[in-house]
Each structure stands twice: as C-alpha cells, then as structure tokens.
Image (tube, rainbow, N blue to C red):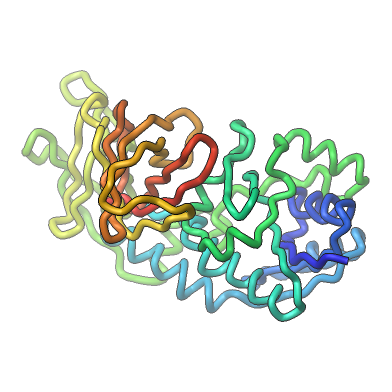
Length: 332
C-alpha cells in the first residue's frame, strides 16, 4: 500500500483529507506540528484516533521561531508587510512533512491546502477559496511530492463531506488567525519580543500632516482615518529609516511596474528574456492581470497590462500561466 504523510491539525480540512486519502488507497500517517498548544494537540490526537490513522506529534517551535517568527518581526521593523504562511510553508511545514516522509519511506506528503497538484506542478484551486498564492515559495522538490486532496472542492462541499464521513469536527470553526498569535494581536506579540518604533510623521504631498503611532501598525494600501481636503487618503509607502509614512490618494496607489526579489521558480522559466504571465500581488481573488516578466539573477521585473493596487513591500508577487503556479518573489 502506498504511504503518505498528511499534515494533520484535527480540523475539518485535514480530517476530510485523511478520509479521502484512505479511500484512494493510501496508508495515511498523520503528522501534527506542535507549537505548545495543549488543547489543540489533544483535539488532533482524539480526531486521528476516531479516523483511525497513526499520528506523530513533532515540536516545531524552534524551527518556527527561527524561520518564521523572527523574520516576521524583522520585516515589520523594516516597514514591510510579511505573510507568515508564505515563509512557513517551505521552511517549516513542508520541510517537516518531507523529513518525516523520508523517515518512514513515504513517497508523498499531503496538506489541506485548497490548491491542485499535477505532474509535479501546483495549480490554482477553486476561485472561491484558492490558496495557491500561499504556496509560491514551496521548493520544487517539495512540490513534486505533494498531494492536495481538497484542490477541486469548495469549502462548503468539504463540510458536507465531513458530515457524510460523520466526523466529530464537521462543524468545527475555521482557524483564521496566525497560528503563533492566536489572539490576533500581533502588535502586542511583537512588543513582548522587541522594542517597537515610536511615533513619527505622516507625509502627504511632501509635508507632515499628522503623527502615526509606529510604522509597524500600518501597511501599504491601508486607509488612514479621516479626510484630507475632503478626500480619503491611504498608506502608499513606509520609510523605516526616517520613521515616516507617505500618504496618497486612491488613484495614486495603482502601479503598473512591480519588482520582486528572491524569486522562487516552480517551473522552467527563461532568464533575461521577457515572457508572459499573470500576477497576483496579494492573497486576493479579484486582481490577476496579464503581465510581461523579465527574470535576472533571482529578481523579477514585472510590467502589468493593467495597474495593480498598492503592491506592498514584503508581500509576494506571484506569477501564473493560466492556473499553473510559476513561482513568486518578495515585493521590493
């Protein structure tokens, strides 16, 4: 029987994955990645027992701190807006899954991401809940081993499957918060780890027009409360060196050129020769314009056919060929 290691949290998605993989003839080995949450860990253990799969618990708190938590904090202090799931996937989640798969001789690993895998490549999932954007930094060697049992489903149908499988977690709420900041208060969390930036100036049309409470509290594209000359204004750029935040009008947020560094290719792409793709600059469903891309030594210069709204430093610019994920890099 074919073996697969499943990232298992004990929630609806991973539990349905386990049942689907079993029905596809896989011998499923669950892997719970523990970051010191006793209640969640015990829930996962009980659910794995109900489904009838072995579950191994691995403490990933040190790897998470080194590869995700620390870079997450440092990025905010640089005036960037990091996405922790994007940086966690290759360095913690998929690495841990693949390492354990190697230990037990499993060729495949699986997760509950709403994306599709085929012939070693990753593709978009259903439009209503596609998560392929979050997978743009997965290594090619990891992508070649991964299965996404939920890739062709919408979330509402997955809950129906959970009910049909009579899973005790069928009505368990989705987890939306950052896993290592369960109360969602990332400012408090960072303040317990480091000294945060102090107040600084909001700048509009080159002039100070007010004070902000720290650059870490803001992200590009966010609206500033109130009006200036009767108009709404938005964060357009954050300067960590001067502790200032530039403001602009809505129409000035849109950019046709985006540069992304540390580009991670998930397909064979030309170097120094322009090619066509489409681009997504945030985990959103409504912006995916065609573009022309030139890659040079890990830097992607992207020229969009239509402007994208407020590309934010630290977020990912992710390229697609149709539904196929080509890779992504961090926006400068």
